Image (cartoon, rainbow over all chains, first blue to last red; front, side, top):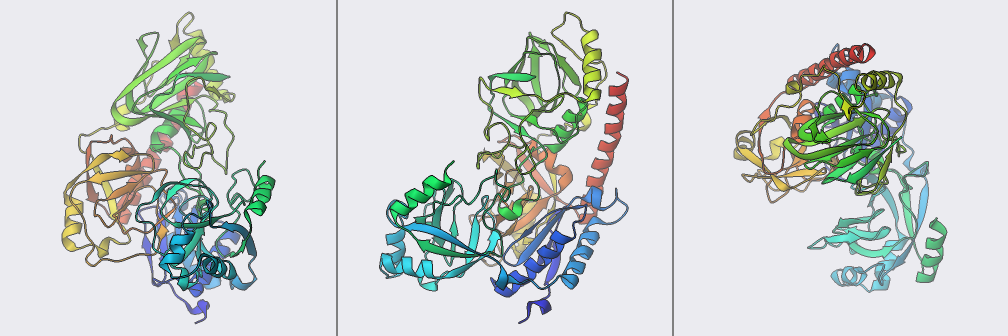
Length: 242
Length: 336
């Protein structure tokens, strides 16, 4: 299906300061492309009353400031936002997901860096080496950024690696940890509690508020993991520390 | 100019009106819990309403002022004194050099705000000075203030400086000085025993069973002690979906009421995550978020359903009132 024909199922309010543009309840690259096309349009056409927009798997939530957008109550701010989104849906240029950048992320798998590698292997009746091979050969799509600053929800995990979350979440996960949760994989950019199965760690800094682009990844990026040794991890980690 | 922290209080953080537009990178909005109180505090000292101020939680800090400093205290009703003399909230306060401002426990409400003329001089990170505790950035060194911290203060605006000069001249030899006008705090701080929080049905409201929807809008919920800047966990009657369903994660925001599978609602607050996957039964209206921010753990709340047009009307009224207040304060500051 061409995403151009993909129509939202509905517009609905999330309270009195946001409109949710909702598509069919599924994880698909077609929906992703449609949402990103609208995001691109909104990026290019900033509107004073639009505060922020948050894409997710099948929704795009647009936050507005009612006071500004309604011109102090002269027009309906919800209707204004819906009209803007309808225009964006109609006028959005094709989203060239295929030409988006590929970010390669070095990962040291297993050992102290990936304490759950064995568990993931055991759960899926694979050897740890096979888990590493399957995880590092795929190209993943960043569907959304969320949960914590710079945290990518990646789609495209080999189904043979799908593993449920830990029964009890860890109190603290080291930053850079690469994890699996169900059919998703992702990277923890900051130290935080969390329940994903940890299979490795990257020395790259995924989020740095001092950088011009604070988050290394953004929705629509493609990601590939490259397995590295512990020695390489240490060298790279030293380069990224400052 | 600077302010020295003698005692930090329970949780005192630098906040402004939040870090908007970075949710796409997973960066939370954060900012003051009671934005109305923060905005008014800033207006009272001649600041733009978004300046970096202190958010004080339940137990206030003790602050030492090396130089004369114009400040204003708003929000939760908190006992504050200088040299054992009570100071008034909701009006400008010139603290004279060498004085110590002691704030005790809040008597009503939960969070008080201290704005300083010129604003606390901390660098903006991703466009905001608010403290993001979990990620450790923004505000003062990315953390709550601690004893011995010295908080730098920027230069006052012309309006702020003019008022400070006037108050200084009117109070030679005193520890502090306040003008004799005040706002009517009762219009901003109504602390009911069991406040009514108005909300709209959330995107997944219809997925809940009819009896659960009825319970939600009719029963009392207690804000438990497991409540903080990220969210209020509620205790009360359990809510259930008509049929269990796993949802895809979608955006959540300040005021989103989500219900995890165990059935007890959580109201997401200022420091909430950007996306979530639990069904959203309701969304607290923007006009009632300041009231919600002032509910102490242990207190009960009730939800009342309102429509989108009603919610907008209430919010627009609140903003229009604030515009009026802004002009009134501006007039007072120009002719103290």
